[in-house]
Length: 395
Image (cartoon, rainbow, N blue to C red; front, side, top):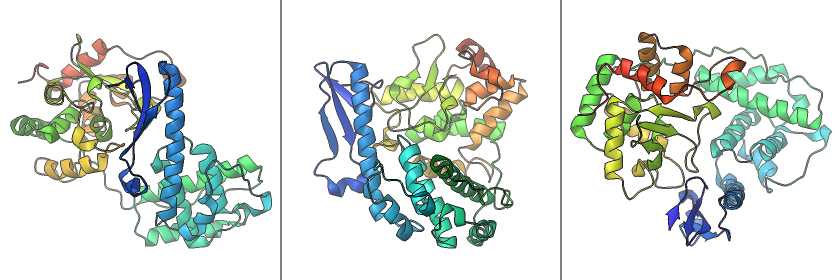
């Protein structure tokens, strides 16, 4: 049996592709097996990819429906009627009776295909808050007074300005999409609502250069899987979920320039399309990658402890690592602070901003930046070596 990461949710046996998907732990009570596995009846990788993705999408829709029936969501008593049928159902309400709960269903049916669970939960939760605060009305019946009252309800919940912004953004998206899809003539009352986005928001501090050196020294001294993850992030600026969800084949140390490929996997999606990139490995990140490949020869995952199910458990990694990190950095620093530090460290050596964006997977403004393949590794490593301040050979 061999795994082919180019074909998601599959492995090959005697040249034949097989579909394999682990049953989510929260739904295991509905199954008599831990994995769903069967032959895709093809030796073609392209055919197997199509069949595996279709099967995975069907399972995602089915599991979503199962979870919705038991999830305790805000406004669930209102939303249940809207989502209780199959997501792929072609039913569409009449223009005169498009309630918000029905709008959520339309939005998820048409835009939720292939999206992560977080996309579906965000739409349900945000619109559930509206239903709790203002009732489940026709979209055209909501007023600016309702939208302002909704904002006040969120403020009473002591939500941070950033959280309120995300919720309003989701509600606006659901209403705008559904009204456009059904040809409704209306002005979205949830647009242009004022609230202070800075309320309750704590600025993430970058990790200072001295603290980075201290943390990397401690990582080498303790020398275990958790510290390898910290070290890998510290000199690459990767998001924690990106690093925790790496496949061992993403770590390429046998090239002239050792590097890590950040790409999407069935168990871990990327935040944006621009997040896919290749980052040279230097200093502590190279040391960590060497340790990982030496220790995890029998697992496809670079960090098996955070990939025990069908998804990378980045939240568990964040909790454990931030707790340890607090002993060595200033109060407002977290694992995500290494991304802020990477940008500052590159600025300090006057690295061009588009190279900074490529290393960190940040969006670069301007149409021209969408052309070409970006800078080669030889250019990227030159700037990373400058910020490291010493050779990239590990201890």
